[in-house]
Image (cartoon, rainbow over all chains, first blue to last red; front, top):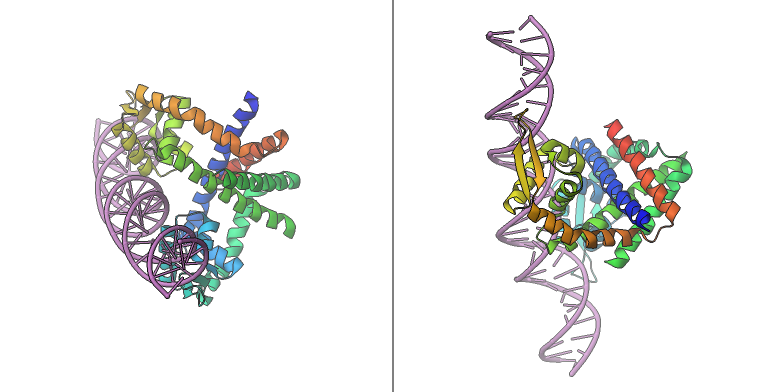
Length: 146
Length: 146
DNA sequence: TATAATTATCTCGAGTTCGAATTAAATAGA
DNA sequence: TCTATTTAATTCGAACTCGAGATAATTATA
């Protein structure tokens, strides 16, 4: 099974490279709006999912909780996010996107989505589907192992 | 084509998430050896490909050239890398792994490879192959567009 | 009920990363 | 040949990230 192991390592290299290349493209793109990639990721998840607790955001974006605190503070300063304490559990805070934040996302998102789509348009329909499903399996597997 | 676009975005989310999860796993793993993920990536490429110029390393790892300088300086301090000026073009420097660096890699690599392989062992053979190929296509596409 | 353990978030310091500007060397063009 | 342009690597400051430990609140247990 040497071949299979070899393929895994190559898949991993390709995964890392693809992710990094897309990251660079996104960074350049949203830089115009004065946002970092992490800030954009947080804004995007709040935009699509509604208000979330700090730790839910942390779990979605997979950054350290101290980084989550930091990023949300930056977004609050920019007026894109509001933080509100849970009335029941006062340890917990919800972060939600503001109207201004929503406006920015409505401005950026179409272009952002189009860019992402253009990256994947080199794949056949079924190839794209397999890619997506395989990645989901692997990320679930990684979470299980850790 | 709404569906296809939707799938692209989901593939991208899955890609980012998978990459981040693996990154965290690797970070934990090589932390024991006092190496950062970037340091390990540089060491790995020098280990497998032999001496390379600073900018070749930068292109492989996809980090800023200033970061490349920084990381290689750290690796030199640790005694894992040596830097040598090109005799023909004196602007250019080659970085190569030292015997000590090689020893460390021989120590880490089998475990590292096994971990990566375990992440991908949830996929069928052909699924893994498609994943690898699709990722290669996408990363090439991204490089073309940028 | 009082104390212990757990959980959510934050603070802080150290190390890493980027991007812009700089230096030094090589190449191209007048 | 002299100057301009390009290229490789570095320096520098600002911003970001992590991990460890602290704080505050909740839940479990004696």
